[in-house]
Image (cartoon, rainbow, N blue to C red):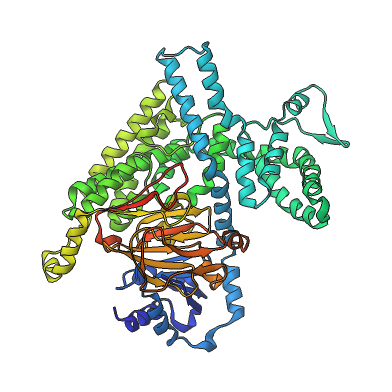
Length: 627
């Protein structure tokens, strides 16, 4: 790799001194502040030899280089004119990005609140559908006590939705989760429900309290906890230390609860009803076209992370009228199309490695997980993405005409078909037909449109016999990478950083840590310890190169709160302590501590498989299997 040539090419393609306001680097990326990010030639930068990817994220233009980033940075700074930096222009750039920043903040907030509760809602929705199936087929009677108890179980998550959202909102707004749950309980207290349901108007201190039912509601509790996040800070400041333990929460509930019942609760209820009514209003006037358009653009929505903003609409619709007819339906058509497109690529390509990748992505796609197909196949080939959009659009056309309904908030696919079961048997049939249309049309479209195959030329393979030999060996072997820390294992696609979530640096997993220790996930050596201590590169005895990146943007801490116990070149054994970090201090400083664990030489292997589990992971549990 010629670092000087790469630096010069990057310098030219981002606009040179006239466009570069500042540049730093972390363990894998150049991080630039550009005066006009739109001038950067992103596609050409991605195509440079030595560049793994480029994204504009978090107010920075980031170019992923890998472990050699320091050498490229050293050459790049030689080209910079220090007199070009301007704080006024940097502030202008910040102002120009204000709208995008607000949207990203809103999308991240929505995702942070709704994502944690989706398993509970999805399980409840699926149980409702299965119960309906049991009654329709005669397996169970609605009069039986077994059915009644199961019905209560399936309704609980929806009825107590404000309490679930109170807890997740507290985590997002950084407030006391138990006081937040208390406020959720206030909205659902049976005495309040009885009082508001009476014939007489209800007042509090002379102010009217609207007669609103908060069971299954979404927005009222979010607004309530948002207000609490400010009142709690105020209460903390004015509460003396000796009595803070009870005075602070007392002030919070005495202020927040009445304001919620008088103003925020009714406002949130009307907003929620307005969202769901607005969707139905659009569909009544444009009809099936809304589902068609949503199905076509769904891959683009997911690619830019915009699908997060639809959570409130989905939940509001499931709460009232009890089903959703747009987003989840469009996802069904899109998921099937992307899975089918990957299957078609698997059959058509002559590259054995890519064949396996596409096959695996196809299976995930038709089961409702499209990221492997989207990022690993269709964005790579581009033409097949267009074929998927055609297939999804035709499937969405049928679903829109038939007014297909979804009854549970879960990723639509073969495993989640019960989400379309209703008393109207035809709804499930419509879902199956939608799936079939999307699969068949996409499969044909991929073959008709075609794509440029990724097969490696034989001459190239012969010219690098050692690399070919190593790759062949990797295909036949298996390496298990254990979790380097205690916490919760999370798919890499859920990391709120495109450089990681789009697998620009390689495949892997992420861990939300519950303790501040990083240990060796295998036997091997320390390849590199970054100077700010937040990142470490390892190499196993089998040759797997692994990057452990503690937190997002923690390079800005400049080593504060991190202690490294090894040096570059040290031999390590599985379970050996590598790094300690102050988890709570980093979080209080405002940084996300989610830790991506990346196989940086992913291209050398057939498959990188993550191990997901509902249980906590740890150093004795497998996290990634490399084939």
